[in-house]
Length: 461
Image (cartoon, rainbow, N blue to C red; front, side, top):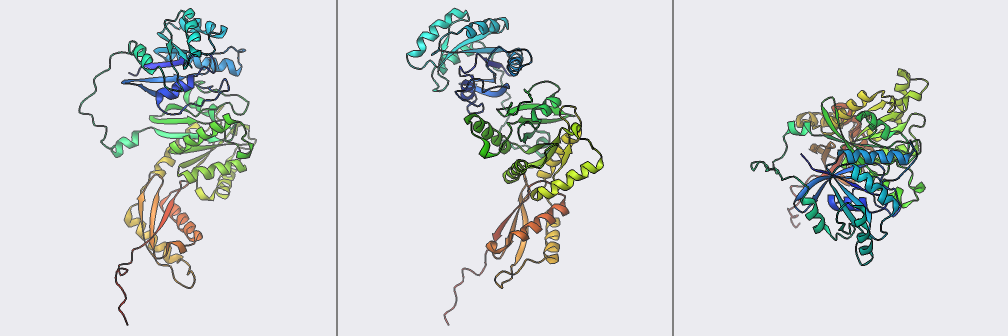
């Protein structure tokens, strides 16, 4: 069982920087502005030969009951309850503050092992603050610089005394063995929830989890980091990423929002299925279409979720049919994309959404039998031959599928640069209809067939 450590402390002492240092990559957003971290974030950490789970938390701060600050602290309290030990981080350059002293008592009452970490101890300025921290009664401070990687050896020595003895692993286990199809079918599906700010992404995920795991607020922009949560839905595992709302680039001014958007885009690239969430009151706006285009270009399976359906006056079959027509009209590049009306707040349509995600994932992984592909190709070319270009006929030889995830094909022809885009769209749409590939990106790469007589020189006349 994994050993879990929660990093706690007041805002802006470098908790997220330490988190990133231990997980070995920049997963958590870091900025000089206090209070960047809001939701708790977990990661698999490594320090020397020690492996453990680390939780980055919001800075401990006081706030009125029900306020965003108070709910951020509730997230931190949940992380402490889940953890086996705590890193209590202070800023050695600033020294002790009344807030540090108050929350040292809070950490002590957790009745769990606490390591006092004096961060930002590089140079002479950190020594005085580190010495002050003895007054907290949490033991000797471990002086580190998370940003520069200093003091990690001392942190290792202190942590090694807390962690349980490692369990010997089966020597016959071979990590290099590829997964079978059955194993791949049971792996968690990676799902990113994206959309404009305040579309209800976090509310939906909280309903799936059955708890207030992610902070929600009527204020747009509550989510900053891309937070991953594990969900089991009717026996199928999912790893779901909540992301920051994506606005038009021209409206993004603050550095922090730029970092949040970049984090959301990384989540899209890491995902296998992306759920584009739209507000039912303002659907298919320009930014929705831009996000959908981004997902298609990244080659991810797409599911459209129209949220806040409980606020719609008309909810019958006619309204759903209207959604289908609108989706095919505005998003022809992913024609047939699954579209589900949901209410993250009330829990309406959640079963249909989770089934649509699994269906989209299956289509994204689909391989078309070669014989069926060849029969379709011959019929498609006969029904609509490629146009002549500059008076010369284009010859399309054959097509083959080179990979799935998304379905990708190689078309061998006589002049690759002369095949019109309109003809490729015709082949793509025909393929979608014939092989039931709705919504998923379809890639067709053109390749010129080698001329078997190219090596022969012309005989002199």
